[in-house]
Image (cartoon, rainbow, N blue to C red):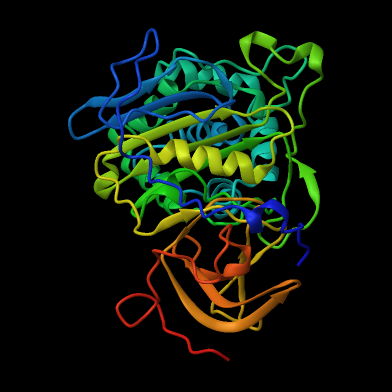
Length: 395
């Protein structure tokens, strides 16, 4: 594990991040619905398009710049899947060869599979077909010169909601069940080793189903990867950064899917971040924004949010360095701490700590050394015990 200097993080006073559900509602933006009691709180520097639709009441609970166009990144894989499955008949069974491609594409956001369907079924013509079939208003193929870049498809939050509404309410049952079952099985580690359980997956307890998207260059440091890499569809040159009204330069991070029993609420949050933003910062900002939303039926996990420091910090099954690694945290990401336990003493000179924080959203522990708190035992967080997670004695 490589680490960043403790620096100011060690000297800073404890900052427990609020759940972002209280406080006065923000003023509505022009052309948007009046804010709910939990109006979206967009972090500074972030551009967002948001639509949250309650299927039980048939109403939107959040709408912020819902028609604004963003490059879709991997969210377009929903349209690639639906196009392939279109008009196959109610008894259609996905062939094994296609199942072997579609399942990793939906669960782990596999880009090779997306490249296959894009090249085999007409590329931009797929978007034209699906736009007409679903009545999408803001969706458009990639701009001229980028026809081979499926991730540059233009998409809005309201169109994303429309895609999920079709899937849940109109698609043939085999199509609905195939797609939604795979989205419920979203893997924490994507096929390119990005940690993709941000946004919806990090803000709510299951049941949820997600299709995430990211585009741009980030330092990974997650899910066992240690290199820096871009997605398979690199950022455009500055001269074309706003082609067809879609920004192709700023890092994009999107969370879309459903939350609650019976897929009660559809959530679409599309975001752009300042150039140079780290993955951990974008991950954290999208998480804060998603937690601020009014999402009927969404169960929010118990715990307190804290910042972290360090690169490639391991999350382990138990509070010891010998325990199996679950994943690695994006550098500087904010985490939910459910409880804490005494475990193996960890030393990162000049710091030593025997306390470990249990992260329920990851199902594992990190040493409290990496929690941005001046105390070894973080205050106001209970000790893990028989009523919560497993209890560990010092070793």
